[in-house]
Length: 251
Image 1 (cartoon, rainbow, N blue to C red):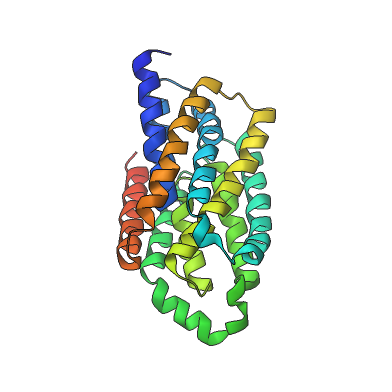
Image 2 (image 1 turned 90 degrees about the vertical axis):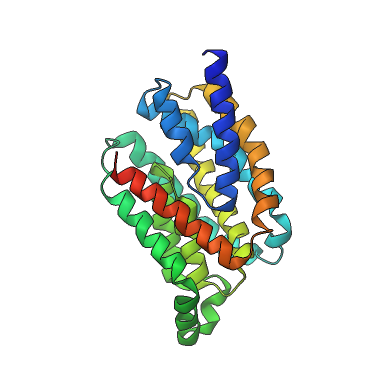
């Protein structure tokens, strides 16, 4: 690896760590960069997942104030994320990488629409069944599990999908839901990373550089993200999500 390539990987790791903490979709920066540098797709994907888990953890720590009082919620939804992430990681190792290529942009666009409509949809869900609002009920559990499968398999804009679902089914501020999103994404990426370390070909130089950048980026993202108003944060999520979807469609 040349010094210039190492610097590029470190830099995109920092940007991805920042974006993942605020919105999600950092992999849409790191993954293409690794491909452009000549790494095979599967090696790039698994090394990317292993490297960025450090940034996910850093972002969750950066949002620790907003995580207070969410232990019960995260215990329930964390099970869905862990099992989904494990399933998605196993699918990546077993199936061709092209399996989700057509459906992923559609999923991201649907998630962006859900984020945009989140206040209205959340009011309707609350009017129908108030007691579910602590951890969202079985419907949110299944949705988080399915998002975990996607996250373990590829994961670009996983955060956009999660924040959309949490905002609809949970009665809480967008900043606190963003903090919960970071924890759930870290669980998905973490369990997938363990699987990849055990059974896949991880490029540890790449993973280490991504991790170093993402750790710093996670702290930057937490500081920036909590300063953004709910309306602007929702707008940023939608814009980034639509951009990611269009980039995947025009590949």
